[in-house]
Image (cartoon, rainbow, N blue to C red; front, side, top):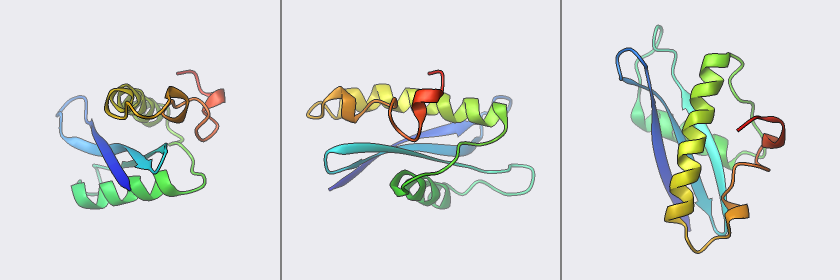
Length: 110
């Protein structure tokens, strides 16, 4: 069974969505994924953004954005999702929900 928790990443000035981060429960484990839109070139599409974020969460590996502001926005969204996931998925141990250990997060300061 797959359950998804979403958190929209918003532009700080306009508060318009520019991305989405997801926590996907796949059986007894939580995986995290994201999607960001270049708002100068593209129009945000909620459905496509969610599909990309879920695909990343299910992928064996992916890279975080290379731009510091974007990486911070994604990591902030992941931290928010982690807190929500701990409350939402009470039947899972914290170790299966925590960001630490996902996608080399040991090296990231969270």
